[in-house]
Length: 606
Ligand code: XIL
Image 1 (tube, protein in one colour):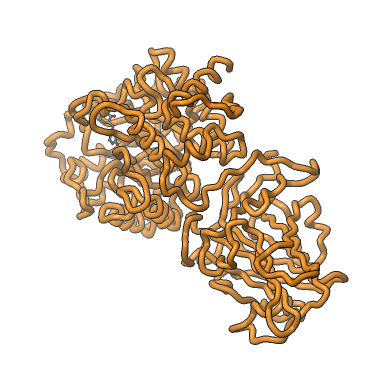
Image 2 (cartoon, helix red, strand yellow):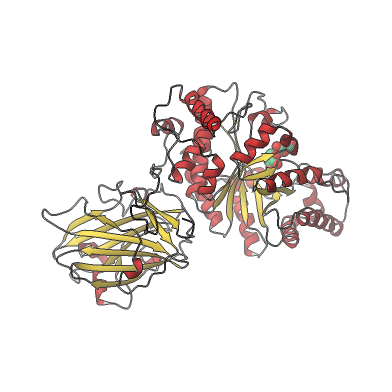
């Protein structure tokens, strides 16, 4: 531990070029922090790398997942027809199991590492299908139940996105070799998650459109496919708004794949550069890694982040066959296994997301990542003032920790909300002098709904005075906002973002809830409103699955979230209270980037 802390602090000093003065708690490994964030962090590994004890130790300490870099490929496991050799693959498996790491099987079908018997082969279609099936059944079958994720087909889409590239399997079988490969993998291990994996298809572009079309068609036809791997072999400076890997476009691509019911993983990230590594290059490289991971953490469908190697020393890009710079340092650890700025960028982000002390100052982060998303905020470590509380205290104006599962009934009674943290909002851009109007809210979820509660202190409850279709906000009302798109940086509304205005008029118990606000009807919210001695109270249930979103509560998973109160004395609105600190001008109705965060908190785990 002491050695590790020393190494980390040293690294930070080198990176910043100055001594770090703030207290650092760097005792947590990247792996521990990934576990806290419930995400897989992996690296590609050669079996022979395990001979190096420092490599083995670093791998097991810092990563919870590994990908055989070559050991699972066809030319390695079955280079002679019918003769399988799993010795190297078995070695990696044993290491992974010994260290409780998840293995990503990579890869069954690829146009490279083609076994000699398949090169220029002259099999009939039926013979080729049988060979494909034998290969997949033997490889996947051997590790059935032990490898939960397979890259079934790798790099099948042609560059530029025009159809499938020419490969031995395609020329022998036809385009349906892709579908057959997935079906055979499923036959071999029905529980394994099956991925299509490719490069150059990370943001929105012609190739990612082609990959999207391919997997959409597979899903539509019931072919067992469960995810898409985005390789992410990129160059320093590629990541940022308007650049090759625009985080927004990356998020949108992940989002559309996720909406097909697929997972997304960053499967082979490395960040290359020309020339010698300079401090500036390594700092910008850190920003690239950080922004890609940040996008992955922001999009709920993204479930793993894998780098193509542990140490720069063994990067495939060091060999002239693949890249022209023998000095390239594209990974998180340098040739001596010292963590690089990119490592700290990743670990700092994971720490912040888990509510652990940051490793880097905000200035250090800003120096790595220019134009960082507005929604990237620093949260303190979650704490509970009252130990009986089901989730941590909220962070004023920034984050609300919503416990789940909690069972709630919409009945106007708050006893089922006991121990769900409450937040009181008594500030906003519009508030008459001497007003004692206040909004107290809470949120929680169960398996089917996200619940909101608003207990409003208001000496005069006003409703039925305006046309709810156009001037609903001029009556007493509470607004809950949700951004379930996975992109918290959105600056305009789209499908998946809703402003759910709930009028006090619901006290009249209408058949259909009386709502206002952008996309409020999309939310399919149910409402119960009652009068209270001090004002009125609203309970609302928003289905987790609707036509516009699929919200899957998972520990530390997040949504964009906002709460407002409109108060009226009869004629017009005279009170506007706002929860999120970012929205000072009452602009949330048109700009979701001003929301705060709702962070799910699994009641069972803490
Ligand atoms: C590379 C390995 O890193 C090299 O060792 C090997 O010689 C060739 O393959 N995309 C992929 C990976 O899907 O399998 C490739 O791995 C890198 C590009």
